[in-house]
Length: 374
Image (cartoon, rainbow, N blue to C red; front, side, top):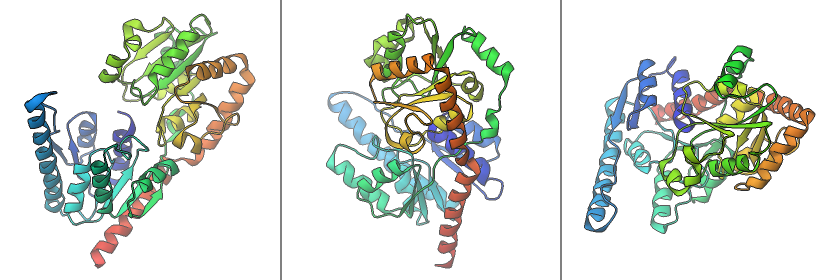
């Protein structure tokens, strides 16, 4: 579980100690299991599905999806009223039906903007109009970064917004030599080799193709072993057959999703954030807290954490040659690698889960209190 679902889980854990939370979500998965283990009531809504790819059946499938989205919106509103919610919090802009349903509850609505371009810049005019109108129906936008706030404002919405950066629990990343040894043995990484890691879905947006291309260009350099932790994006692998497991170079290792990735972070020497878009990745903070030297794309929220040559090396998105050069540079200069990792670890100490969650709770209580006095 990465990204928005993982962030929501951490927030629910924090809020549930003092407030009554109810989770309404589309589809099942790990988030539902985790929420239920915390004693949080869960309602799972059916996800709209595509039924055909061409002809009349495609049109019918599109119509059915719109009907299901409308049903989803009304069910969210119904659940909010049934549970007597004082406020509805929507964890992402990904599904407008959830935001619309929250607004139809006629309660204060907070939308957590965790995106920059993918869902906040739809190409079709009618979709942009719908997005703006939907966001206008909410009370507050909490944005994970200045880049996310700028993207939200670019939609034309007049809803108030503020920035609350993601946070982490740095205590979870204390050195554990035994765990590091176990992971490196599992990945067949020798003591004189550097482990170059990437965490997140293997997709175009996350730049997995760039990561693989850089690994290929360094395949003859025995100092480097590459590893990726995350799940596959089937559409990406179909479009990039050279990135499928059986086509990867011998210096690349694949690990699927793990519930607790801390050990993988601690085993890395260098962490690569290759995303073409990145609002404000929690994994950046976690890698820095674990003591990795960071190489990241010079985009969006990455620039609100990292400074080139001071606490990371930055490279142009989708530029595998630039990434390979940065990796080789850190491989050649142990002192620079240690200086960058030390500074990054110090810099991310300000991004705590407590600060993040307290800021969100503060805004929730303000809106709920205003609703009660109106």
